[in-house]
Length: 213
Image (tube, rainbow, N blue to C red; front, side, top):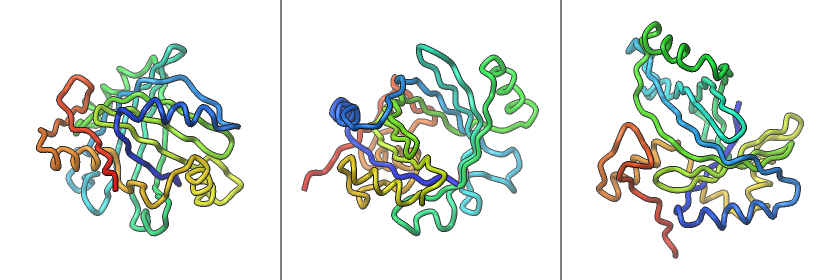
């Protein structure tokens, strides 16, 4: 089970967010990494991942930075009780794929399993972490997301997430409870911008705009 919360910000807030997290004692910063994620749907309508009954995401993610290239298959699903508390609780399973097998793996997904690519997105991710928490700063084509996820296996996960939300000066009531694709669709509809199935930095995109009270 995964426990996390997400907050969205304007692209122009990126530098301030990174500088703030760099000052947090006890957090180790990882390399800024480019990620391409492709989301597939089942070939049998009975198991439609995007149905309300299942509400899951079958994802292949390729990540690369100056040191390495990695690939993983992940399954993530919202549960009926995902938003019952202040911290999202979601089902997640991951499988690591050897980077040299990426092409063959994708061939099997598309041509043997006959799964269909529904949407994809690219982003840059910078991770700050320790034994308790992983704080990811994600640069999407439409804005910045700060994701705070529990890593501890010995402490109550909700408490860890809320502890770090408070520690870095955020209000958990401002968290966005849905996924990146929900946020992207919401922004497109609000700003009257065409929605693309491939969300990339070279396409016209909406943008997160923080409303000041």
